Image (tube, rainbow, N blue to C red):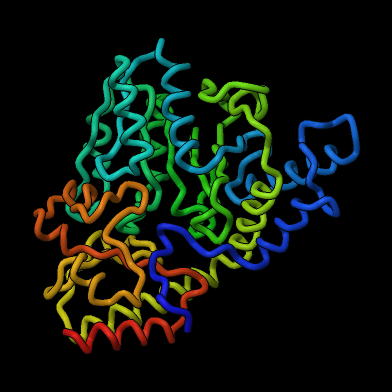
Amino acid sequence: MKFPIYFDNAATTAVDPRVVQKMITCLTSEGQFGNPASLSHSVGQAAKALVEWSRAEVASLIGAESSEIIWTSGATEADNLALKGAAQLYQRKGKHIVTLKTEHKAVLDSCEQLEKIGFSVTYLTPEPNGLLNLEKLAQALRKDTILVSIMHVNNELGVIQDIEAIAKITSARDILLHVDAAQSIGKIPINVANTPIDLLSMCAHKVHGPKGIGALYVRRKPRVRVAAQIHGGGQEQGMRSGTLATHQIVGMAEALRIAKEEMTHDYHHLKKIRDRFLAAISAHDPVVLHGDQATCYPGIVNLRFSKWTAKEFMQMFPMIAVSSGSACHTKGIEPSYVLRAMGLMVEQAHQALRFSFSRFTTEEEIDFAVEKIVESL
């Protein structure tokens, strides 16, 4: 085994070796290294062809058309482009936005920025199990509501929101729906052809692809647009300027292509090792699980031990790489705003640990971690 044992896959995943090999073909002079915008010669044309192949691969995973995929630097940029870009273009219809207090900081901070320029945002409180109450969502909608933003799989809890039910509510009111799918893309099915989602954020590095690349799905029928937040060469239909990084785009496409093929296998593998982990731990300690366990994605387990705070656990077990919350907002060891929004006390939130697994997590690693933890209980 390699140490430390890595149980922080919700923060980022190791790039699949198959993805690395695909990316390498786009980096050197022997491969397709050209600028995809340089269409006057075959080098640029070859890179452009790979970009469009990649766009089609990503689109096929979610039931979209290739033209509906806009490349970004990651899910954070995609979230910013979706919220700020939609707010800017649709503000004549209204200036009210609805979201959930447990959303990713890329959504919450974008909403805060929009509030500073005159938009009104309703931050809904989740139920104690982390799920959104659909009746409360419906009640929060107003005549001037233009956008609802809800995460598919919560990055700290693994809770899966009922996006289909949410989409029915927003679609019936002609309100745009943005879904942050950073933690769900390639892991559980989502189909924009069957579900009226207008904007959907994705990234590669949560599913064994490279960091620094993501995409925003922007619905064409009925047509949705977003105002560009980065200006320059007018790439990506004018919605996101900048030279396209062919190697990263190809890496994202290959990672999602593999994920699509292996989704069922990966899901069952994760469920098996999660259940193995929880059964072994629970036999020795009455751990408390956070989030609705009936709907949680098995790759993420958020719990607290009766004996340790998160800080104490991580100091005691440096050979086990876990986290106390999202890597995107951690500044030292602070109580999770997600858990606090669910009603946990500060002391309880300080105890919370997130264990997150991947297709590369082994039963041997689970057993080793359990053995070390149980020895100290």
